[in-house]
Image (tube, rainbow, N blue to C red; front, side, top):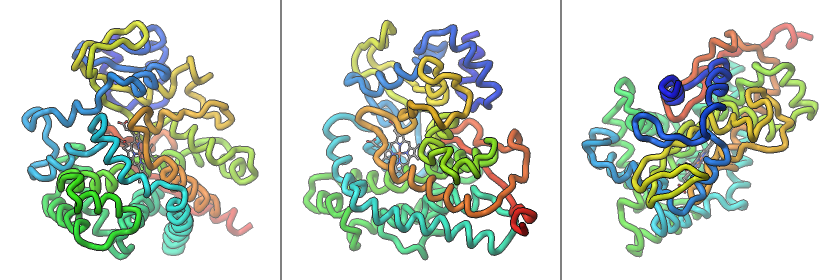
Length: 398
Ligand code: HEM
């Protein structure tokens, strides 16, 4: 049975399979050691405990040799990815995190939010002006986060397509996706990252640039931080928008319930993300021998937090497979926990909210049976690959 679960847990599981899988999980501890030696965490409380534990390290991936794990054929790209502060511990992590914190202060966020609202509306209005049928993932979910990236990095919107090509190439590299690998775009990306060292930047990036010029951080730290800002909010927000938009069609009368306030938008989004967490696995290692509950994890062993399972933990969420936006407890775990808690949570949530609002302006029908909507297979960032919808001409006429 454990063998079955190990195989199932490492891939994406559809809602139907979850019920079977979760029933079996209920008979197992919320954290256990798999046959391959990795400790897998499927309990919500245990996941929070692991993330908050001071003896946990995020450095595991970063420390793996190039032979064991290499992101990309270009050495520099590999080094930049591995140097990200998301994969570091202690003061180094904290210092770099603080340097970018100004981006996420309420004052800056208000500027970003206003523009995001307008951009989501323009993307949907523009697409539906051109055609009655659109793919929400293509015209909105994959575009809005790039516009937000342009805002954060101070790039003009005219650069959005170029930026998207570069970040897609980076994603392909990180996901070991041979079909979409693109060396030319990766080299362009490196040039772009380098350009931030000398060009004027938005004021919220000043602390980072100043730290570089005063030699308080290395060039590699700087490059890795710019790259993290580009990548961390792209796939996550894209699939977050996709999964939440999917629920507009998968849940009975979601359009009207959101419009008339029966569903609160934020609760609707959290519930959508709880059932399909954008980041499906978090990896950590034990910096020292430690115990989570009565489960011992020896020093240096690897821990994987399975967000999909933890966010459907029946000890925390009643009827965990049901979509219920009236739940009192929100699954904050979707955005991680402890020292690495998502810096861009509010930006991500706002993009999803702006997207739903833009979609609610139209009577839309989904063009495929819900169960046929394909999700990214076997990827850490998971959400619908496409969401084809069309204007409901009849409602439009009436
Ligand atoms: C729905 C959207 C999003 C989701 C579900 C999400 C989820 C997460 C999760 C789970 C982590 C923790 C990773 C770990 O502990 O290993 C994380 C970290 C992070 N996120 Fe997000 N994220 C979202 C949007 C964004 C956006 C829009 C940005 C920035 C523009 C962003 C920036 C970051 C950064 C910089 C970190 C690293 C924090 C650190 O290591 O200290 N995220 N995110």
